Length: 202
Image (cartoon, rainbow, N blue to C red; front, side, top):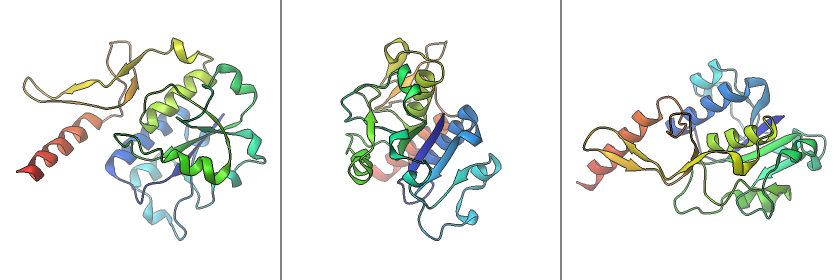
């Protein structure tokens, strides 16, 4: 199975780099491609961390990667059907909108839905980060685990120390210790962003 991320952010924020790095490590560099990067993008525009991991990317749209649109599945929160293990027999490529999660959601995946007319599948009702959506899809499609059998944690509290914590407005896959699976370095980045937000208010 191949995973396609339609890159919909204007650049590569630290959050995006951490999420994409995690996805590459989990699915393999040969199974992930970033599409729809701005025309004129060169390797110099790609973060070195991603280049070192062997990221594949193109300025072409996702529909140019597959031989037919029928082999492409858009992971879409507004889809009428949930993704199931049997979808592994129908689709070859799974397309994700590479966007930072908005809270509340703005349905930016709807841009892809309208633009390409791809058949969609849903990963439940709650919003996920891009790496969580890919991780969940991999569990369903490759590991043949039903969505309802995946253990999730919703809106987890990330605690930095005894006095500081923040709630994340997303659904995450839970690890064996009962904690949300986050990219390496994400907690430090969340803490930094939280402190920056507080500074901006003062």
